[in-house]
Image (tube, rainbow, N blue to C red; front, side, top):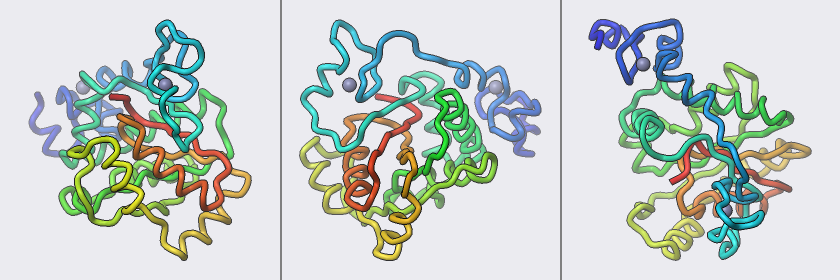
Length: 235
Ligand SMILES: [Zn+2]
Ligand SMILES: [Zn+2]
């Protein structure tokens, strides 16, 4: 590992190698490209995007759910390199990776021909914000706006509460219903911004879908006609 390149904030955060890519995105081309060009083949669940095994259209998990969002699409399984990269960004304060994640979202939107999009970052918990000092999904949206001109509305907020990963599914639902909100002034802003737009909620990892569903419900209650979820990884 090239220590100097890390000190000068240019080297790849996975392998230390410095190239034109690592300086901007935090990962060198060799580490970044397999993730960027990764495409999942085969039939996928219309709702959560997981591969279908012997099911038709919708996977067994989603048949028992009543999600408020329309679809979830994700880039990677939450393990291996993808998990490390997301962890470096979300937990270790490696903010350069936010640009790489923004690039992955941008490539996805282009590949799917999605334009006229309004992104909404999933809200950060106050505890995480305090710990890392930045709102990690909002920062990805900011990078997408800065680099590619894609608009976003960071209107969802989360009140201080219990840590979701320690809660069961039903408790998560109740906690989120109680703690997620949009400020009144942002409600008006969102209602005008979302007109005629394809609303995409951006989150890091899709696990039970509870957070995505709770966020979508609020957005729909406040004027969104559709809400699709885009996540980096599925657990
Ligand atoms: Zn590398
Ligand atoms: Zn599914």
